[in-house]
Image 1 (cartoon, rainbow, N blue to C red):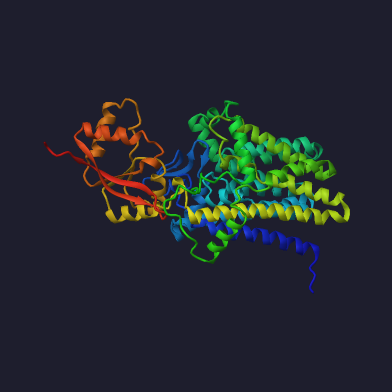
Image 2 (image 1 turned 90 degrees about the horizontal axis):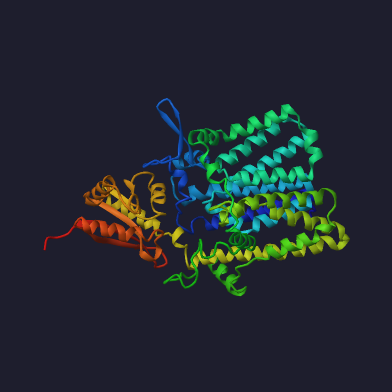
Length: 543
């Protein structure tokens, strides 16, 4: 029997965990429709193009920001992918899955370099099996995939700088941190948490490594990565900072609940995947993988919660067994998480969704990995078997929850936010070739633009309808939209509307102008749910 060296066995375990993550991610790629925020990177690429801020270079415009706090980094990464492979779900989601797999490998390397191979293997396994980390990466509507990748790579480069004293690694690490801020300014939550955590746990090492020259290198490299954010901030007088400067504790209880649901894996049931009873025609398993998923779900009682919350509590209880670097690593992760989450919890209108709380990852996995590894060393010969059992049970519970999500996607499909009715909607509109398509609800415009690569003449059909009192210019504009020939309006069916006040106001305005609502078609998803309505406004017949 061939016996590999310990280092090779560790890397095989890490590679197996990452391979599992990749295969799990690919199983979900084609399962749902495309949500509006997920499709946002296509905004600067296809007509009608949109962005928040662009840099003018001669007669050209280079889009840099989608919103005051959201950059176009993903747009520039995805642009060549869309050019060569189109804009379906695979070109959109597979790169995010690959970025997620790379972030797990970086996490493994970081733990191995700082707290040893045993903790690295444990942390890699926990992170790769985490259903919330998997799903928020695959669908990446946050976005979160490149947040994890860039911050993880930056931390590993700083470890290399600490070991080599080579300022090249220092500059590269802070450049990646700057790119993370460009990707999404909420990266500041994690970066500030990591900074305070490091200063609290390894202050001597940090002070010994820094001087004015290295401080200048770090600052300039960070600014180079975040320069689009700086340019946009100068342009709008730093609107993103002003909008998020206030603090409010009213939402803290609900955000605690969101954090709990993220840790135990329950957070995306009903939000991303339709629940039982919401689908008139649940789908039966059609192949071996789906039958295995259905049988596993049935056998284990349709699990919706992993054991990760209990594992976190156990890791905290075992923390007194840690010493030296292990104890510092646990404290570093806990302080960084606390600082970052307090900012999430007290920022009004932010930090209250799964795609916010998942930004804390992989720090929970780090706490568990280091604590369990340290405990295994203190328990002598029984330590490794005991931790192996705990890890196996924990990973199995996470895998069962991920399987439940997969079976929900097969049986019930996506929620109306991720509906696959989007695909026949796009096909029907392309076949109709209308002169204009007015989208009268959210979660339609961006997704159609991505799928059709700017081929459809898309317009917003919501503005200025929601305004309490439309100006004469607004009324003339809206009347022109309603009266224009060969136009199609698209909205969700009443049960699925995001802005239910728009349709009745639009219909009343049209009726007052002598037009009536004429339904063209109702488009449903693959599970039998009516989802979209296509209609026109036609001049009312004379009495």
